[in-house]
Image 1 (tube, rainbow, N blue to C red):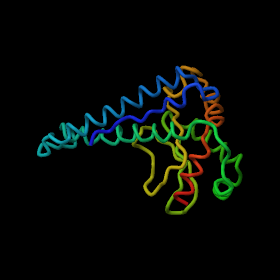
Image 2 (image 1 turned 45 degrees about the vertical axis):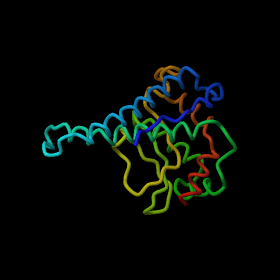
Image 3 (image 1 turned 30 degrees about the vertical axis):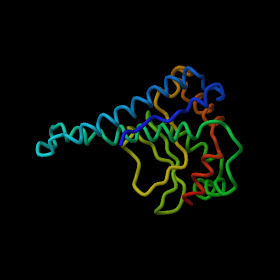
Image 4 (image 1 turned 60 degrees about the vertical axis):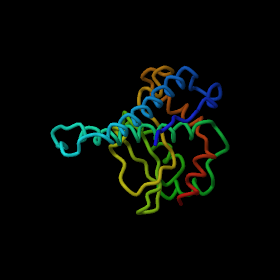
Length: 194
């Protein structure tokens, strides 16, 4: 199956504090992950499995990087999908944040503190084990997310998500991100998994 990048051009000219130049550069990076995923999957079809080895082998290296490309593509899709300011967090989502974090403000503070703790991703998830919302940090696309999670909100904290607009001022980017969350999408994700 060939993966095709999704078109997120509907975001252009519509975000507050995230420029079209920033978005276009980010779209290009996302498209690169999709391209690399296709390349890895094609090579895996013919790679010599008999030569797999922990130290080195073409099959081994492709398998080690497969999750990077796959998650790099899917996490970017989740991120772009949860952009474009709309409505507000649902009452059910707010209640869940209050249960897990004591208050909405503490939830927002936790997400921002998590963002300051990683160069990669912050994911707000519904943990299927304890049935509560959690924030997790990923240092690479494939490192840091425990099993049994449903992603509700994806926040890209890699420098490529904000350097054009904000340089090293990550806090300013986080403020812009929160102004641009598409709560309709986040609410639907939460409702689908709660």
